[in-house]
Length: 204
Image 1 (spheres, rainbow, N blue to C red):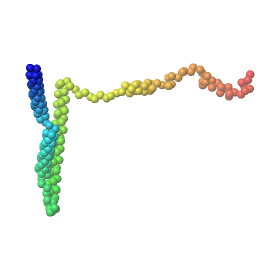
Image 2 (tube, one colour):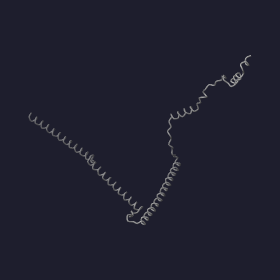
Image 3 (tube, rainbow, N blue to C red):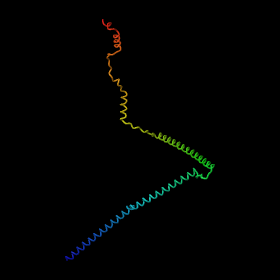
Image 4 (cartoon, helix red, strand yellow):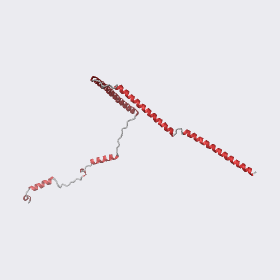
């Protein structure tokens, strides 16, 4: 009986242990699946894919830039041909033909300069009109252009005041007035008169 009970207890323990292990395995499997799902969601843009995408974007930008440059070059050639015409053959031309070619080029250049001057004048006129309209709008809104104020140092003001005081300061005004009449012209005249007379005349 004791052996049977012991066996039953051992079997029960083994069964419980197996049940615990099975549950742990299920939980572990569930956690691994969840982590894989998270990685699949978050890790769509892996570093390799990012690098590849960056290279593709650079390649696309380089192609677009090249196409834009080609388009601008073609537009430039078209405008030059339209304005200047195709280059003339001057190697085998005689003097009359060369003169005619030079005259044509001069006339064309004159017309281009005239058009350029007209366009520049029109641009200046439009700029002036725009500035006038802006000033009118600002006047109506009550907004005025604030002039840029000059920075003035406090020390400059002090120095200016000191210089003004120094200019007003007169050294002669600070001197004391002496009222003694030791040396006057009248005394000098008396002395000269006494010197003119002889000694025997002065003595009595």
